[in-house]
Amino acid sequence: MPLFGKDLGINLGTVNTLICEGDEIALHEPTVVAIDVEESKIVEVGQAAREMDGRVPEAIQIMRPMRDGVIADFGVTQRLLGHFIEKVCGPARLFKPRVMITIPYGVTSVESRAVHEAGLQAGSREVHLIQEPLAGAIGSGLPVATPSGNLVVDLGGGVTQAAVLAMSGIVAAGAVRSGGLRLDDAIIGYVRKKYGLIIGQRTAEEAKIRIGAAIPQEEERTMEVQGQDQVTGLPRPITLTTNEIVEALQETLQLQLASIRNVLEHTPPELASDIIDRGMLVCGGGALLRGIDKWLTRETGVPAYLAEEPTACIAKGSAKALGMLERLRRSLPPV
Ligand SMILES: Nc1ncnc2c1ncn2[C@@H]1O[C@H](COP(=O)(O)OP(=O)(O)OP(=O)(O)O)[C@@H](O)[C@H]1O
Ligand SMILES: [Mg+2]
Image 1 (cartoon, protein in one colour):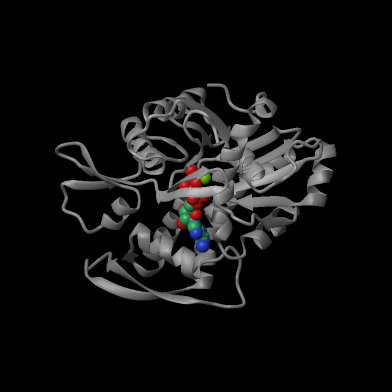
Image 2 (tube, protein in one colour):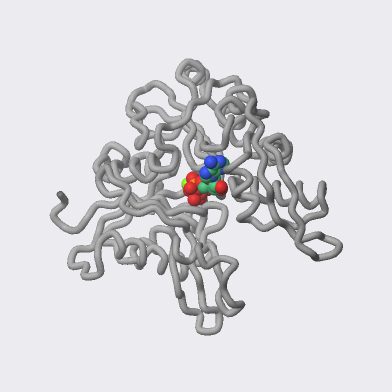
């Protein structure tokens, strides 16, 4: 037990925020707020805000303060973080927490400093930053401190990242600012083009999760979705199949794959042979897309396997990293 306040690992994502204390996930909520536009006041945060989506008057706007893995609205992100930290630590915070917040690989120093500052203003005593792939590897128990190479892929909602780790540091890495949200967009585009029907983001995401896959599946699932006819403007249902989602996702998946291919191309040969032997660890919410491991294996030639806890491992790894500050000193981004 730390002497002053709690030690928290915070995975501040484009779609979800997780806070880990010790080994336990203490909070897991959407990175969403509901704002009263006229009074520019936050009315709800997290799950409660998400549930209001599509059911509120125009005066209330549901928004994501993070975009493509980085802060898009500083003030709102800081208040969202403050709200979440308070939820975990309690309102009467005599002792402020020490936190480790994740950032995507490859963000600018201005973008990472914004996260640091938001962490401090949200009521933390001390803020450290860690790149998501490194946190995911630590949280999954990969032997990151050894000289052998480990490849970690994080398929997030806003960013796709890949990193080769050895000796507790990042040897080669890459990221593209495209993730699960773009896959949802691809489904929206596909349905509009094929059926002349407009569907919402939530419907598209639901189809991806319930029936979607990265490669054709033996078990073909179907789902009826409601949309708005592009011409008549009237509501109309259609039935989507797994194979249609597979087709809809391919182009975007290929773009996201570029970041992983690029990393493999820039990996020193000694480490590359380790990686072929050990395979790549896949984490982030996108790891839950059916068949993604087989698809990655096929497309890269490196065997892919899923993290035991694809989303929790990143938050758990960031909490754990607070106890490894000295060892990780050279690997963590400067603030
Ligand atoms: N079963 C599933 N199949 C496919 N995609 C899924 C599934 N479950 C969750 N996802 C997707 O995972 C994404 C969220 O993943 P995650 O929580 O790792 O993102 P994030 O950390 O908030 O984003 P980022 O790290 O990019 O900032 C969403 O786009 C969501 O649709
Ligand atoms: Mg993430």
